[in-house]
Length: 271
Image 1 (cartoon, rainbow, N blue to C red):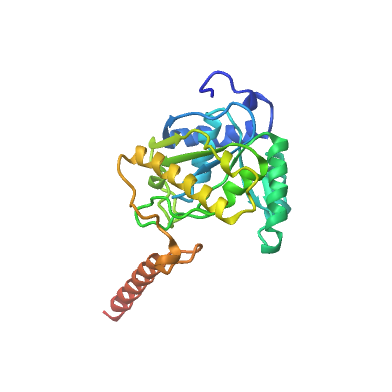
Image 2 (cartoon, rainbow, N blue to C red):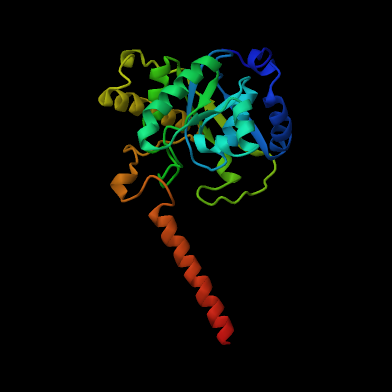
């Protein structure tokens, strides 16, 4: 593991130089990073962070760049067909994945082969979407990160971050300009998943490996937040929530606020 000094992957000329030149300088004015831990300087790996803000991809991507690696993401295959956007995605080594249920298996295997070929770091959010846990602790994980790591036979590295919510609060999609916002990144050691080797098609094995991944991400976040997460892992299904879209409570609160604003306007017009 290397921190600072030698960044063999980042030193190689690529489109990332242009992207970093555009993103990193202004982002550095808005944020102040504290990075704990490190990433392997070379080789393929799956990086699994918690997900609590829509701006996490930028926050995590800059952290990976600061750690000497090029951040890559799993992106919807349809985005690769968009003019200009698709070119940037391909040239920067992002990995296309078909979202259709029938294509999930072939898409996963294609991504796995691409990961090994590129020998890169791929960021996969195991929760699949923004956490629904009321206090932004990690919720129940999905199997994508684990399956990709096991199919590719590459390390899976857990990571936790905290602070980006000050720039873009969860579910709001409104950016708040704040200078030098503290963001803490806590990178864990690669998880030992050797007992699950060759078992990426076993549901029970993948579920147990995913549980361990989420437990380690939660532990890393506890170190940052200096507190304990709830003993029971939050599962949206147990609270009548869907995995995507706004949580019921948020929708109800926004609907109520909209109704209050409408009544206020009507009362004002009546006067």
